[in-house]
Structures are given as C-alpha cells and as structure tokens.
Amino acid sequence: MRLAGLASSAFAAALACMGSAGSAQSIQTASHVFVSSYATRDCTVPEAHQLVARFIRAFDAGASARLDALWAKDDHDGDAGTPSFQWYSTGKPGARAGREAEDRSTLIRYFAARHRRGEQLRLVFMSRGGNSNGYFNFGFHIHRQARDLQRPGVFEGKGAAICSNAGAQLAVWSVGPRVATS
Picture 1 (tube, one colour):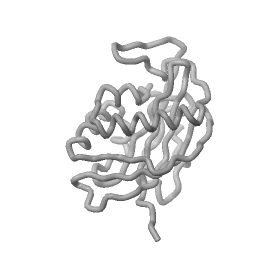
Picture 2 (cartoon, rainbow, N blue to C red):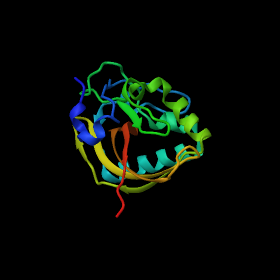
Picture 3 (tube, rainbow, N blue to C red):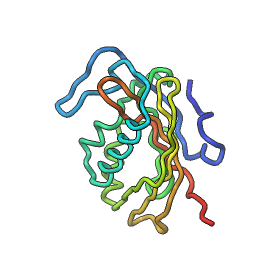
C-alpha cells in the first residue's frame, strides 16, 4: 500500500508515493554494500544528519558513484513496509514528481542533469526526526540555487532514511514549496 498520507496537502502534488526492500543477505558491489539488503534497525539522529550532509556534498560535487551508494535500492514490491527506495521529488526547475519520482533507475542521471545546470544545495535546518516502520523520517529546509532557478532560496522538504549494520541510505527526499520570508 502506498503512503500518500505522509505529506501535507500543500505538499502532496509534489510528492510521489512509496515502494520498499529488505532481505538478510548481503549484496555487495565494488563501491559499496546496499543497506537495504540487510535487516534494518533504527537510525540515530547523528547518523541521519551525517547521511544528509554526505548526500548534499555528493550532489554538489556531481559525484555519481557516491550518490548511487547513498540511495537505497528499490525492491519494486510496492510495499512501504519493507524499507527500500521510495521516491525523490522536487518542483521546478528540474521537476521530478509522480511515477518519475518513484523510478530509482533514473535517479543518478537526474542528479547528473541537475549538476550540469549548476544546482547546489545547502542544508539550512534539519529536524531531529524519528523512527517509524523501518524508516527514520525527518524534515528539512534546503537552500537551492541553479542557473535555471530564477530566484535561489530556501525550500521546505522531508526525507526518510533506512539504517542497518551496513550503514545508512536515503529512501525518500521531497523538496516542496519555498519557505515564506517575512
């Protein structure tokens, strides 16, 4: 079952729905071990914050292999109860929503395209978050700038991580509306 109720109604159009992962067997590549192939455990707050910082550094550097290692794989079972990649969504520019946001196979190419547009992220705020149903859920404010973004600024968002003894990986990242300034 998809988890559409996780987003506020103002955010809902920008968010895609969830999918999942997990077996107890290790799947290893030359560059990293997939966290979602291990039994999951609760994430710690520092572990989740470090994961987000590593993601932003890799995104800003256009480091495709590092980005790929930081994102959970998709088990394609459509069940959010088995933690895996769920979605990466954002509004314009570089809008990624709906089924496209749920497609893990296009994620690294998407990051490369945004890097070519000069997109840079800076974490402004990240909530302490908490664990629920195999995911560590958190909110954030992120500063976005890119050549195709007319007004750089701070946007609100939410994310989720999966943790195991192999480490932590991102499963959800949704950048929503611009944060109102007074």
